[in-house]
Image 1 (cartoon, rainbow, N blue to C red):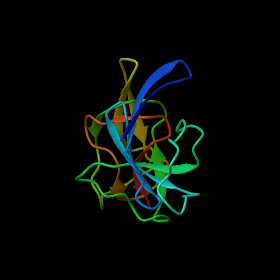
Image 2: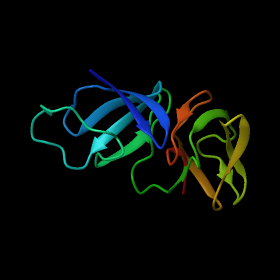
Image 3: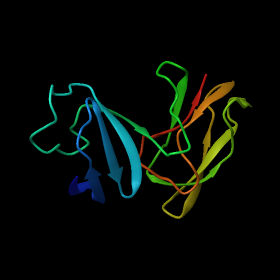
Length: 144
């Protein structure tokens, strides 16, 4: 397990990276767990440490033990507009939602930000739980 400290756009990030298992890495960023799928995975486990997540070619999805990510192509991912902490998840898997309906609430910079559904559809996956720290662009829910 490797530990790194990054400063990205003036913000500090503590990153822990577990050894690769095939194309998958387990990564923790400021305590939030992520499963990272490498697009150009080496044939064997990487000998050199992974560089900054911002430069690594990877697909990142938040993971929690109780939440399973949706299969790729199973809908549109609704992402976090900025880094923060999820303080409310307002929908459940299988729930029908309307465009503009609140799906979660994110606390960032001591302000609450509602994350809304961009379209009508059905929630096919929830990628976060209350209390999770998320980065900008992290998937919150998937709507098909």
